[in-house]
Length: 392
Ligand code: FAD
Ligand code: DHB
Image (cartoon, rainbow, N blue to C red; front, side):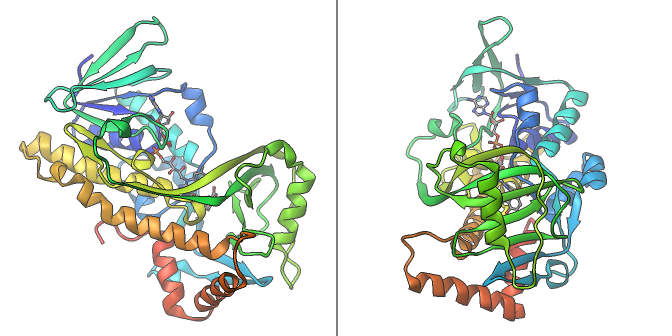
């Protein structure tokens, strides 16, 4: 098979790239390890920044998002059993966040690619990349139908294969940064109407918790746990007891309970591979960087890389110039470090660990008090949370 751009991974990054390139008349083939059912059913992120919602709408894939997404003007920070609203809408001159599940974005983008040309290979095994230093690199994979190996020969390869994918390992002498947190999140989905009109981020002696939503009948909730803990140690009763304790307020907040139909534990890390390109390979999204989820930045940051990569590839095909592609890593890193820092800031301000000293606890409260009490601190959080403009 021959194409212009070979894309490894049908996550939000790979699918959005294929979509933006197609609008510019550039062909692509996506090679994905999992089945369509798996990628369309995996529960992950939920919060989209304003510019991304605008982009999905402007490029013709925002119809379901506008019908089913939940638009929020602000968030709540909860500490010392009191709630403080950050009015993002007012503090940012009218921007909002939208709660719309990542797998719904994936469903919309897979449908767009299938309508356009159907060029997604699912269930591809044993992927290798070849010829990255040449003008015609290739993605080789085992075809699940035939059991034999196939190859997509292309001109550019986009490594959009997530944190555990192989593409990053093809970049020699990478500059990398890593911090692994001592805490993880246990996330649940349950059948219950939202307990709060907006997302609640709670700092509590027993650990962090987050109340989010997936529409009028489903809640998404998270609690900080030991990342090594086994999910079998967490009965539904234990989860609800912890959530009630951590979300409690002095004025009697009521948490709606309902049957839990999904639960899992995951590890959190801050990771940056600052060398995001090698020859004809460009890596994007979680393949190049991951953030702890506390600021809801991962998917949004992946999309920021993709906008830059799509601009670079478009300039290459339409004008025969490689200036933007040559500067791809440098162009991405400003946004990467901004989102990395914001996610670290939110995470360390809101989580508790037994090794924390009383001094660190007071630092957290001092920071939360500042945000709750001053417009400047609240505005800084709000601007980062709704997302800085694309070319800030
Ligand atoms: P991925 O989504 O990881 O996609 C990579 C794709 O590549 C996958 O489909 C994978 O199967 C495929 N792949 C991997 N290896 C291979 C291979 N060898 N061959 C072929 N294909 C391969 N972000 C937000 O912005 N907002 C949030 O609210 C938010 N909340 C989150 C909550 C949770 C619980 C989690 C876990 C994450 C959250 N994130 C959030 C982060 C967000 O989900 C990720 O940053 C996002 O999925 C990154 O997209 P991606 O396309 O780069 O990578
Ligand atoms: C959700 C996830 C996040 O990481 C976050 O900060 C807010 C909401 C969610 O899945 O709804």
